[in-house]
Image: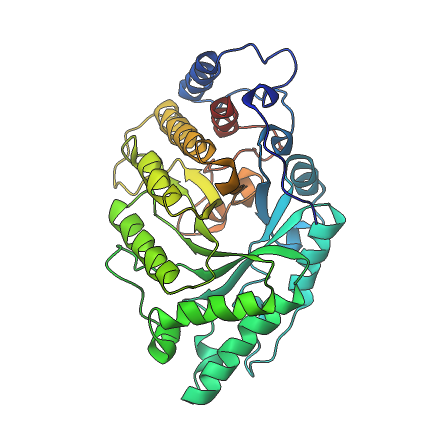
Length: 366
């Protein structure tokens, strides 16, 4: 298990021979490339991301990708933290009789260890999974098996998983309170969250435990509700150690929204994990008249703002910077039939070359 990188000064973030280039020059060059009509920025030779960031740089993946030589090359070259995209979720581990199957999760843990990557566990409790397996459980059995699941999964990877998303996506879609689901109905809307953190901490006292959610930057109301939940949990003595902001960025949000959320999150004193970064070029508009260059310029601007906001955190709060997929074709946005294909939401293209989004993130580091 690879330890966190020590903090490094900004002069170490660029390859030799480029250290004297100003941040303004780097940033303007990146945005200019992104705005070129019809084409992404040309690939630029650079050091691996894990050598540029002063903290671990993460990526998600699934066992079906382990045999893809191109995927492995990008992942092992660029990243030093690994999040199983699916295989450590309840859907992959929990059987209908509530027994546990660790075969796929173990394969992910073995992959991370074999490639000297930190392992981030994702996710113990999620509102969208587990309902069927727990449907026939009475109140006592429900609580017992809930605890047992969290305890047994966390304990199995003690010493291997450095951290966990303990509860995933607890806040309602629009930010109006918390989600209602089978866990909250049986154990309480806040109490089921506290219970999961308490059990996970008992099972692995050394693991860094996160509350993880999405649209925290995109929707200020949801970000505020999330931080209010964090405050509630902290006041109750919950062993909550970090905030996971998925950062599936809407590239059309107003400038400053990302920065504002990070400043408020930093005030908690907790560790911050950019846990699932991507930035779709597509829009929910029925008619989208933006040119490709305009889309990429918006994408670059939001990724720059996110990276700068993360880097402005105190070093002790910068847990990791994780992207949700290695290459554009690996993204869930391109696998989802509703979204179609052809999006470019990640840092590397199909051939493993850096995209204009990569250039924006690297420019912001300076």
